[in-house]
Image (tube, rainbow, N blue to C red; front, side, top):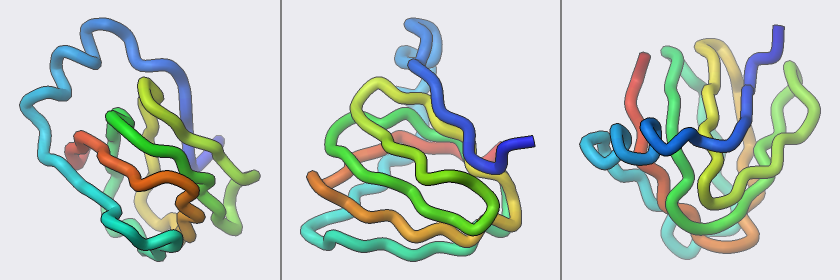
Length: 89
């Protein structure tokens, strides 16, 4: 099973995520994070590639719905500042 899942967000998910928290990468081009719980997010702006030992690289861009599973240690290589709406699941 993939530890990082990406697909296009449905219309309902785009609407629902408006109530989720906002995360912004700022001006950094690299972000490292160890996920201690499952999280889902919908990319609002920006582009990045998420690298981890448990998955092939995953490119994300606006409109993508992404789930990252607990236990993933990820390095985000950010090509354009990211804005996500997220929630833990």
